[in-house]
Image: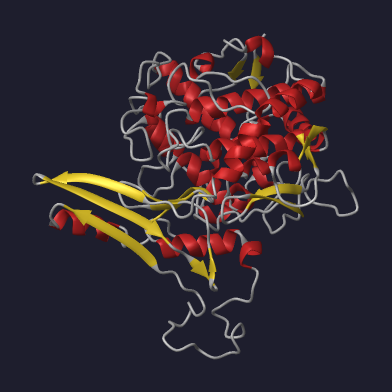
Length: 166
Length: 318
């Protein structure tokens, strides 16, 4: 064990010393994660001699406020994010619904679907239940050709819920 | 001499010492502050318990390699089991220190046993009793970790990740939403199925790998999330974000996961992938790479494949 001697007997002093040693790196990671804007997930596949490239970024707003953080599309089309590291969703909408439930302080304004947040009237063009919530999803796809498999890959993200209660 | 890690529901002495250790570490301050980590707000001392919370979060936000957005320094890749074993070992050493008991071994929660109960009964299983981990609620209202606003030494959640994945300060009670995220815990058939899977891990070394690691971490399998991930989702509340070590149940979950890995290692000649010679794109996950550390010197996956001289489990029947 390469570091066994250092690891066998922590004391308050050794903890403080090691934390000081690691703090600059930790701080850089903590502050650097959110300085680069939306992250693009790029998926690649090959089908029938064609190279498929699918780039996906999400621009998510709740009650008009943008939601930061990194959102990921896995190779099999599941949507995941760093804020909920043990969750996986078939739908970005379901992901954001879970975020609202789990981080109530971050969405502390009046609920958008209750009718009171905007004077009790429905905004024109807004779907009941999502009023005040705009969640446009920008998906950029490029491919040497547009094979059916690429369209199928896109469809995978809109399958029914895999994570039943969300 | 090796310590023995025991089922928390079968040893009241270990149970009570675990609870006491949590509260001692929650109220120990060795010097680091929120300012040290760039956490916004007034500068507050960070307890030893909360340093583990920050360590987990930082590891999770450390992408390995940095040019991708999925595999990180503790999850979603091969290092998942070694890194959490490193974390458990560090916590165990600190429990031994504050309890003045170098025979103390972290307990585990055999959640698959509770998974055999009817889903409606699982949120009231003995683990959630008032003398064990306490129950559900926002915040929880029973058990040893209930916030008492008049008692500065009672359990408070101080550092949490927000919806954007950033650390922020808090001052509130512990939250759980038992059974709200998924209706039931993993079952014994699932753990039995996981431990016979091989290899340990394989390309593409991520959440789509067909491997023991990925199945046990919980990304692949019928009804995913399964196993480890499913336990997080079942408990909910503070077990949901990257600051999930806030909840003392976190370590009981991971100790059980580690027990599952120990069973797999015992049955599979203590093998590990990827090897030290794997490409740099797997840096942080290879056999001889340093694992992300905060409170100590780093360890390598190779260091933790056989720790039977340090700890054993009372049972490897998972």
